[in-house]
Image (cartoon, rainbow, N blue to C red):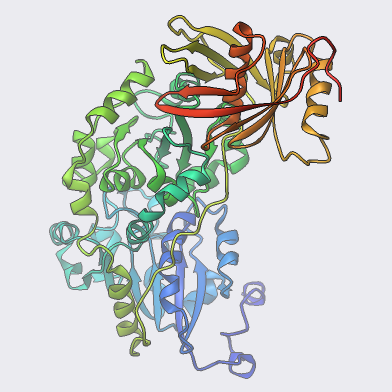
Length: 582
């Protein structure tokens, strides 16, 4: 006990806290964290205590979840005092808020509110043992997590003073599963979903943050944490090894952008480094891993299609009206009457052995939003902040502060365009209207086919296998034009062409509209498009044009899928008879 007490927080709580704390008369609100997933839902409601000088927020972790990695970092980022669990249960508080039933919540000295940490209560999980009360170490028959008596009662009495639900159908299922807890049920909306709804008007910004260009579609790969989820290997089929290489090799790079949102328990359970190792080839081919805490909602808003499973993120996507294709559909892991189970029964399924592109195009062309997810996610859209702040302050026993209750807006994510260092097989052809159609495929397992198309290989200078550079027709680089490490763009290009005599063209991409190109015979060209895109595609269009026309036109029209760009070709220097100079 002496060693444990040595780790206890002394300010603003503790035996002598009144002597040291500047504001020692505050009401205490304790955030009870189970793992990173539950922590994210508590972070949603933390701003409801902003500007309230009467409240001191504290945090603790039950330590009961196997998924402990990342918890300390998330708690530290809140900047509030973090109590060891032993101190937390020994410290009287005015209100405790949890987003899970894990741990010995009945030991907390104070009023307790329990929120959902997903889109309602849907998944079956084995009920808790008496020592840990955690879904991750249970031993009895599986029921719907958070609804049955083994979850919500302790010695026949409700663990929580208030159980927060987002829709009346959840309360109906609680009444059936555990009528003793019904008096604690409160309808207060879904703060996570409300933050998504409030940010939908920023969709174009979120797409630009991910480097999605006009005419390009964003496919979002999503998996819940369960072993039978899309990322898991315990389902009827291990879909992931079949799917990953095809996401980037079968989908034309300029027509489809691919990103992945993985459940925090996958991310922190296996370790971010291991996730990056598993997805290395896909990442080099253009897949972006989205931050599972701060970035997943923005990516969900930005997505044109979600390739997911039976988890909450895929269900939120359906609620937004986004097409969802299920790569895993474990109905046995869901409550029979839950809304997510109803969705999974009717949602279209991925054929892991069929060609991927036709499946996506068919889904996009024939999509009609299902009414169920949008209706069942929340019965109080946009109102959770007001409802929850009112609930919290009633339980604390103080009036609400003046002014509206507001959740934080979603932050603008960092700019993360795809960096494809895997070799690109490029198909080009001249269309009837004189445009040059370009299709690029990242590291394809099989040679892509294109009607009457010419083919060449474009390779990033930093490709993993240096041997690919010896086969390249076009060598690429992305960077600022004034990067002192690389030197001026044409100097870099001359150096690269001298080192790789098989390449005929080197392209230095300085932005989404511009690149500088050096041809082996000395032609220097600056390509500038009217709109955003991947300017490396314009370099491939120029490569195809120069194969048929010794001197470039002043303007090229480049078609990538449904997108059409007018690209200005400005010749900066021509020495067609000489070697490239600096």
